[in-house]
Amino acid sequence: MNLNENKYYTKWFKNSWSYVTGAVLLSLLQIATLAVTGEPWRVSSTMAYWGAWILETIGIDVSQWFYFDIEGGQEILKGGFLKDPRSIRNLGVIIGALFSSLMASQFRIRKIKSKNQFILAAIGGLLMGYGSRISLGCNIGGLFSSISSLSLSGWIFGIAVFIGTIIGSKIIVRFLI
Amino acid sequence: MYSNKTKGKKNQAPFGFIILIFAIGFGVFLNSLSDVLPFYWITGLAFGFVLQRSKFCFAAAIRDPYLIGSTILSKSLLISIALTTIGFTAIKYGSYINGETIPGQRLVINISFAIIIGGILFGIGMVLAGGCASGVLMRTGEGFLTQLVALVFFIIGSLWGAHDFQWWNENFISKGFKVFLPDIFGWFGALSVQLFFIGLLYILLDRIELNRTEDLDD
Image (tube, rainbow over all chains, first blue to last red; front, side):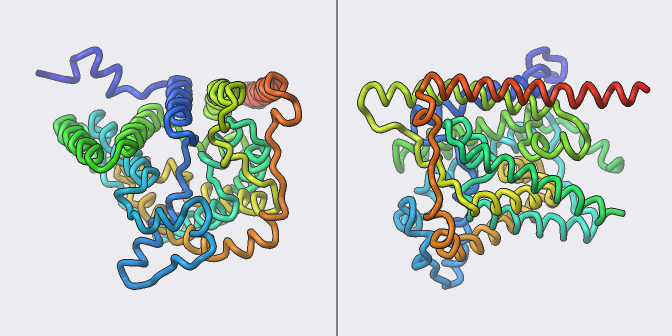
């Protein structure tokens, strides 16, 4: 059996889909998510819990932090990774992308090319983590899901992120030259 | 990049099937733990699959109009927001007229200085790291070690933010206010205003790209 000669394999798994196809399917999944779980798609709110669980394994307890008193945080902390639906969903995004890239034979371990790239990724990750916590959302929860929920906060967050990308672009241009 | 060319051409689909079997097995295991977990697992897989297949990147959608003048992904994001708005509004309106609690109102977030500063920091971060939260997860799955570093530091940054959250909450977030558009414009009005505004933005982005290609032609 040669998969590459199969028209449907090529169409569904090998060739990239159009952005609009992606957009429509993401919307469908969002709507299904709100209908079933009563909450739109969110990504970054989970990350602080991942950090808390990692710290717990080395004996540091952060459960008294105020942050973990909101949105049923204590329950989530006690329940652990396997009982937290949003953590499972985030793991699903990684595994779903892994499956997709393997099916297309596009998976490859891409090494970090330079020290600069490492530093940029680290600082970028830190800023995103901090920013998403104090604004209670990322591009998914704070922007995509909030705007779609007819909340003005989503638009304002979006404008702020856009301003951030202008600043970030200037930094990166200066850094690279 | 080129040294890996032969490796890249190797058929990896068999490994894909192994991952699929693992995913199904894990789903069955989750089903034994609770009723809700399999749904989150399946939708997570589907979100990851769709993001990778269509190379949909939220960071690029917001960054590219300014950085490289490309707006095709931004326009696709607008289409997605418009469609999701219609679906969400239908679900919310349905609950409202049936006298039930409107779902998903937690994401009507307090508007305060904190979301502006948080948004700016987030925007800077995603340009530096080359991807936002969903993009970092997706590219980790594709094998990008850089994005794995970004994910680790995203977690550290989240902890830092969680640590400082009380301060931000006391000084800004708790003093903020929520604006749910149907409270101002009514349900039909809010939906219309939002879709109209999305349409305007779409035209604006389209013009930016048209102007740019015309400049290139000169």
